Length: 140
Image 1 (cartoon, rainbow, N blue to C red):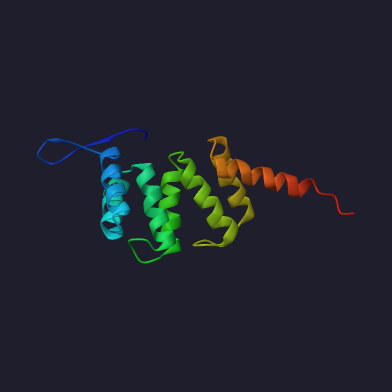
Image 2: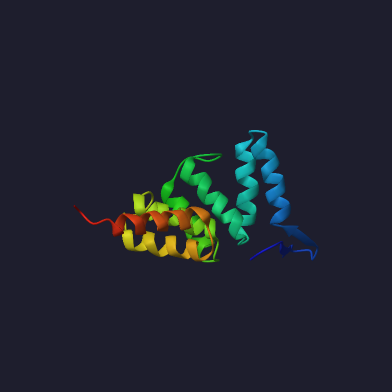
């Protein structure tokens, strides 16, 4: 879901969320009002907007604006990753590699790292390069 997600409310008016909410959320984040930032992201995340789902996951992962809960972070990362959000795919890979919110699993970590790399996520590409470089080393 790229761009703006459109939601129709019960009385039939159309409200644009997504990009508008991201801009509003950024303002609150920059002001240090992390609770409000989280709430605005949560609205769009519940509507299925992947960038906000990733932001909600990050908030739970780091404890910004909400109590830290890495299991809940993984749940939100998965929702966004399933929509091909490269940031969420990378964050989910990190969670699997480090056992944060999930049982550590190298295979699942690599699966999500490759998905993020295929979406040109720079940190994923770098990490894959490092892993390939490490695996090419031959003990002396």
